Amino acid sequence: MPLSPTHPLVDGRTTDSALVRAYRGDRPELTPVWFMRQAGRSLPEYRELRAGGDMLQACLTPELASEITLQPVRRHGVDAGIFFSDIVVPVLLAGVEVSIVAGRGPVLEHPVRSAADVLALRPLDPAALDPIREAVALTVEQLGATPLIGFAGAPFTLASYLIEGGPSKDQIRARALMHSDPHTWATLLNWCADVTGMFLRAQVEAGASAAQLFDSWVGSLSRADYQRRVAPHSKRALDHLRGLDVPRVHFGLGTDRILPQIAALGVDAIGIDWRLPLDEASAAFDHAMPLQGNIDPALLTAPWSVLAAHTDDVLERGRRAPAHVLNLGHGVPPETDPDTLTRLVAHVHGDRPEHD
Ligand code: CP3
Image (cartoon, rainbow, N blue to C red):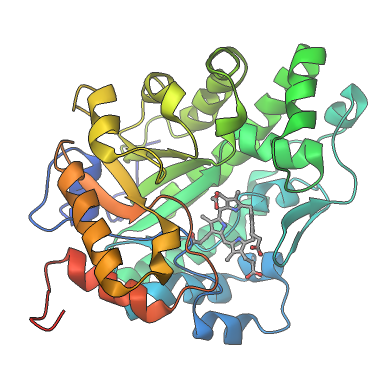
């Protein structure tokens, strides 16, 4: 089924937005800008709304998830909202006991480590995604011409949390399972691809104008392992979007050695972390791939002149790509002064007061 006639990309609300144009490789006059993790603890209005409440419960309460998504759009004037949720939400909705511990991340009571653990995973009931559809629809209604980005975790990053039972430095248990029991590995990654793919499709059908797959921990893999044991599952997750004409974006950390393999997933734009200059990344795609990134999040606490010069350098290097969406190289650190982000958006949009 194609996008509905009332979808913002079909009725024209977001079709010509700077973000959608850039993802489609058509460089708009102003470089669009949004920030990964723009919603969240850097905002006092978020901390107030969330006070005492559970993170995942907030994700499943449509009015709350919608309001949190809108907060950074109102405050900073960014060119897109990113749906407030988490990569583990579809896993939770499929019945896996997972919680989010502040300052740590997703934690599982019973990690998934054996063939029996993997066989016990149940498919995701599409009806369980109703709160997600409702939250997206509410948000899109209020965003008007500003596009909403839907997102999902890539199968590898998701599987890493399931196997490790929580955040880990090098995903060593996950990589061990990949090699010691390739069959169980493939079964688990297919399960992850399907729950995450359904989560992503639900957001797009409900009104998201772009879809970003986060493979945050993919940097711990060799090129061969990525190609053989991971990329086919990322492709399977993206295949859930079949028939929907929506820009697809990939983001991972430490992806230098696998850029061609990422492009081969069939995405429209690729996010780059802060370690690889955008002109070099662009060369890896023969300057034919729209790029997103890649301000070093550490510089958000540097003096303004340092951050502004770094941003100008990123913009300059980004000109080598057919189009550029300015973002950070990873998420907004919680201690960031939100005024710095607002000022950065104005700077990127070319609003540079003389007294800068
Ligand atoms: O503005 C946005 O980007 C909104 C939505 C968003 C969240 N998580 C909300 C969140 C998105 C896109 C994510 C994706 C996500 N979640 C990723 C991929 C992107 C990345 O950062 O690499 C990953 C790896 C996760 C797993 C996860 N969830 C982590 C590592 C954490 C951080 C733990 C912490 O407290 O620092 C979370 C929790 C989380 N997800 C928070 C938010 C706003 C913080 C929870 C809180 O408010 O206490």
